[in-house]
Image 1 (cartoon, rainbow over the protein chains, first blue to last red):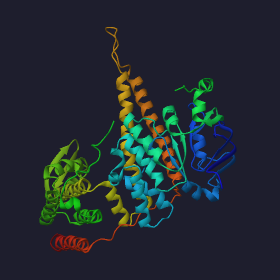
Image 2: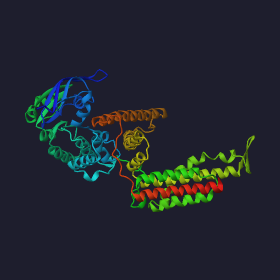
Image 3: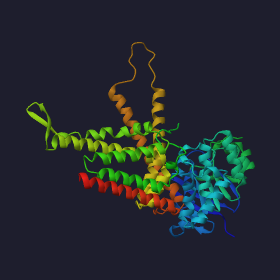
Image 4: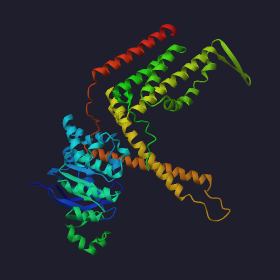
Length: 236
Length: 268
């Protein structure tokens, strides 16, 4: 059996020479739900972009048994669903339907299957009635749900979310937490929302300055006040 | 902050709204083509064309007033045709002495000018009805269906999608500036700074808007890549046109053809 995500000794520097990841190794088993926390600029988003080959650094990244390299990119991107922080970046099509259909269309699925995928993805985020709507006129919470639907329609094995609760009001946040709780796939969630992390994600990985500084059960790490404080996090 | 007024679509429950967007798109284009091919001075044909577009306005439930207000947008472009009154040779109408020059207006010139004005007015009305009675995504599908290159259609779609986001962004910037543009508490001191300083601030805002748009385009591209984008634009096939649709299309195109033949037979 393979791991959902296997990262070995990954290092990456941005073109301006600024090192963003330094020797990162991480394994996530199928079905695991993992939080990725740490201060701004710790390298969380950079790490996420490596998971489907948008950025490629030195080291090995394997996703669902597939090494992330040029010839596998298509399959890797089908296996890992990336939900970006700003839904306005993710929803680029004229209508909600077009956006949710984008991934399946690029997988080359037949039209009937595309329709089925869109319907079931929208049903999973409880937004069936929004298919013909125009993304611009939706609220942030609604956009966030649609953004998740746009990757659910690709039926990925791993769901990776960047700051899913940022900018949501308490009700939208609660709805989103329930939605994520009910999704069965492997999950890696980058977040500053430690309350959500504690509620939803049993394992926690803390990053700081491009390194993984702690990795363990959320409940235990949350108790370690010194560790949290050293990396700009607050004890809940 | 949210912008709705940019979207020309006006939701109504009308047969024009319900019509297949592909039909509306093709018929509107054909109408505009007919209007521009109609020879100058074919007044009865213009009246018939006006009757057609006004019927569409009434049928669409938008109201003639709404469409006329929007059609006024064409007015400045009509002014560009004004010199034609004086440059076309023909029977002199009147003369305007300007300095050492004399401008002579001709009947033919005037006729040409009025025709150009009518043409742009008619075409504008048709375009307004199309834009107000068709949702933009449907219009994009229609463009794709008639064979406009997919990449171009995709660019229209992205532009339309992010125009709103950009305008919102600009409004937020301006609001942030307004929120910090206070009056000084010291009496007698003029607030607002010099014109040059304010110009610099505005320039900085324009620059930052550009940079943000640029960075956003990068993030959008990454989001597209993440879902498998490979440079090819793909879309679901559209349902075939029904028999009634084909009939309407044929009837409309025949009518436009007949109008043109009529116009050329008598005024061509």
